[in-house]
Length: 412
Ligand SMILES: O=P(O)(O)O[C@H]1O[C@H](CO)[C@@H](O)[C@H]1O
Ligand SMILES: [Mn+2]
Ligand SMILES: [Mn+2]
Image (cartoon, rainbow, N blue to C red; front, side, top):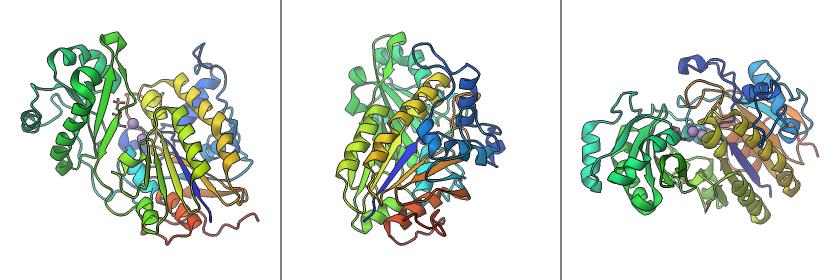
């Protein structure tokens, strides 16, 4: 019985979204702009990397061809001719350009409602809500209370937070309430408990997530966020591919942020890992032991959190190259009828203004030893990805999207 491996390269968009202008993102293209910057000699940082973007394994599966299909432009260093697998482009139906929207839609469930957002004002959060949270959690107050970048906000308020015991609360263009607090001084478990309190206040406002952002260090220049981030997310509005598989008795392995993003729904095995290396290692270990009929889904968040939001082109390029360098390890482990799918949940163009996600289409790269080379076009919903996996794994179709495999012949 076949198995499926779904790898989400968080924020690795490929431009070309027809509705990008409505988000102020017309022209944003994460992969294309990184490749152009690298080719122009702007992707280097002596000790990290230099030269044109080198992602031969992703490119062999159609990354360059997917960007060309999405934007009409072939990025420098990439090829228009894939060597194996199916390539295509995913266009998001859901209105949010955020992580839950992208992941839920990939798993077959576009978001049918409008998320709640906090205004770009100071304060960003309603006074009554903050007063109620402080009373319930026994806090002397909060810091931040604005739209902000998570690394800048700990630089700015970290020392004051340690001194006063006030956590740093901030938001972004996404439907989020984020809380940064010191792992030692404030306490990690206390931060998680606070997030649960806040979640009860924000969920009725359709705020997608409360995110714990613990950090370490004692002085402004030395603060560093740790791998103990935790997302408290509202539940998907209907059963996703994960629930449908679990309901059929299949095993669903969720690696990294995946279980949090689905609020645990449909997950049979939750595997925590932080950083590209550990996420890859956990994925490979799972591949070595996962049974027939199972799905493993991994979120590689670093592209987004470490490089996209930080507008770090060399870092993003190096991360793509590292990801690419380990792809042969996945492919070597595939059984004849395993299906590997690589895609993304939204864009986060590191050359763009601001520090937020960018509305973009995403690559869909599909490989199986049992599949011939081919093109699956521009898919009108990311739900086609989940439906393609459902199709491959032999479970009934869901309510949204159409399998990218329908009409394709196997190579055998
Ligand atoms: O700046 P940091 O804390 O990384 O925040 C980013 O992370 C959030 C969740 O992905 C996004 O909404 C964005 O604001
Ligand atoms: Mn994301
Ligand atoms: Mn993000």
